[in-house]
Image (cartoon, rainbow, N blue to C red; front, side):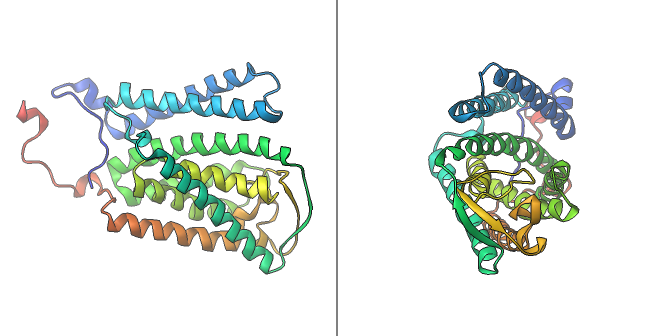
Length: 302
C-alpha cells in the first residue's frame, strides 16, 4: 500500500523541505514536547489530581491535549484535510476490540504464570484502587501511542518502509523503558518484542490509533489494576493482592510480568499474527527506493 503522505503544494520548496520525513519527524517531536509541557501545566491546575476521580479527570485532560496537538500537526503541518488516524467511523468497535484484547492477553499471561506456581492471590483491595491505575492507563495508552505509532512509526514508515519502521519503533519503545525502576536489558528487550511489535502491527492492520490505544491502556490497567502486578517497574495496588514467587524469567521479577517469558511468548505470537493479517491485507509500505515512480509528477500535471 501507499504510505500516508502530507499534502505538498506543487513547486513550493518550503513545503517540500517541511514534508521531508526526517524534517516532519523533528517537527512532530517538538510538537509532542509542547503538548507535554502544556498538559503538565493543565494538570497542576486540577487540585489534588493524584487522588481518586480527579486523577482520571486529569488523565483525560492530559490525553486530550496530546490528541489536539497531534490533530493540529496533521492539519497545519502535514496539511492533510482529515486526521485518518482518529477517524470517527467505527472508533468504538476498534477501541473496544483493543481493550478486550489487552484484558485477555494479560489474563492469559498471568494464568500461565499462576499455572507454574508464580502467582497466587492472597487478598483483596477495595475497588477505589482502580482509579489511579485507570488514570495512568489512559495517559500512557493515548500519549505513547500518539508518540510512538502516530508520529515515529508512521513517519519512518512513509520514508523507509514498514519493516524498518517496525524494527526502529520497537527498539525505541523498549529503550525508553530502560530508565524505569527495576528495568533490565531483558525487560527492555521484552517490551520491544512483545509490545513494540504488537502495537505497531495493530496500527498497520487498522491504519488508525483506536485499537492500539485500547490495547495499550487495557494491558496496563489489567496488569496493575486487576492483578496488582508492577507496571513497567512501577509498583501498583490492584484489586487483587498477589504473592509472586519464582524465577524472574517466569514472573518478570520486580519489573512486572511484561518482562516474563510467558508474556514474551504470548504477546510476540499475537504480534506476529497481526503482522501476517496486515500482510494479507496489503497493509505493508515499501521503502521509498522500492516504490514505483509515477509517470507524471504533481509538478508536471500542473
